[in-house]
Amino acid sequence: MPFVAAEQPKCPKCGKSVYTAEERIAANAKWHKSCFKCGLCQKLLDSTNVTEHNGEIFCRHCYGRKFGPKGVGFGQGAGTLGMDVGEHLGNRTSEMTNTHHSTNF
Image (cartoon, rainbow, N blue to C red; front, top):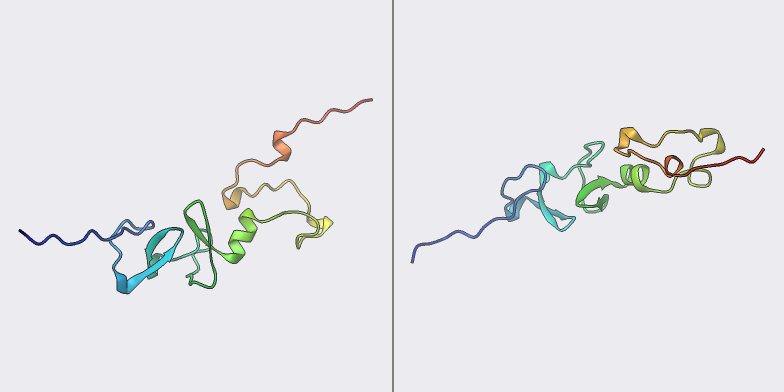
C-alpha cells in the first residue's frame, strides 16, 4: 500500500497549505503567521487581539469601528453625528436609508 500524506488545511487568506509549526487558529480555520492580519488595517494579529466576524479576522479596534455600536454614548459626541454609513469600512446601507419618514403639516 503506497504512502499517502495527510491533507493539510488551507489558509483562508492565501489558499496554501498550513503546517503545524506555522499555524495560527481563529474563525474555525488555520492561518499562516504572515496571513494572520486584520482584514481592514492589515495589522499583524495574535491570540490577544484577534476578533472574528463571518469567517474574517480583525483587530479589536477595527472590529469595533466596523461592527460596534455607533452614536452618542459610544465614544462619539453629538458633534460627530453625520450621514456616514461607513463605506470605507465595507458597509453599503444604514438603518436610516431603510426607513421612511412622513411629516404631518
